[in-house]
Length: 229
Image (tube, rainbow, N blue to C red; front, side):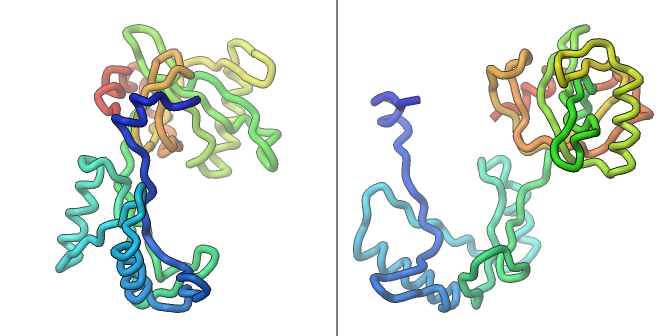
């Protein structure tokens, strides 16, 4: 899609700067984060590049204060905090220790399993992709799809249940009896035209399989819509 002039005017896009790896011909990756940050701030102050924004540093005096900042991330519309050791170098890959993304806690909702589809790769012989829904009155409407969050043993049990409780088939997809509650963890909820419900979860994954819970006690679409961002 092409953004309209009004959209560009009302919501101008910008690039946020977090680090600097090279200044001219000088490779800065072997410098500490503190030194790279100083060089980034110097470059930004001298250039004042349009459309670029310098990321703020977050001061804190204790881990308790930092936890409070992280716990308020959802209200501030951010995913969490990025923690970096002051002496960390910039290295390739994802080495553990120097940097840590401390994300906000996930939201959870009880949903009902509606459809299942075969997975891919080593899961191609299992029904491992699950579409789940929430109640809108007496009707279940799809609100998301999850492929992860369960153990191999849980997958085998779910796969067998799907095969034994199929109502209808559409190609690789099976509609199943609405009898299993999936507690789903997710990051946020957004409007969507892909689902009949009009909403969709961001980063959904199965948190628990509630074999013990009646489907009538699963959450409603109204509950989900209250979480819209």
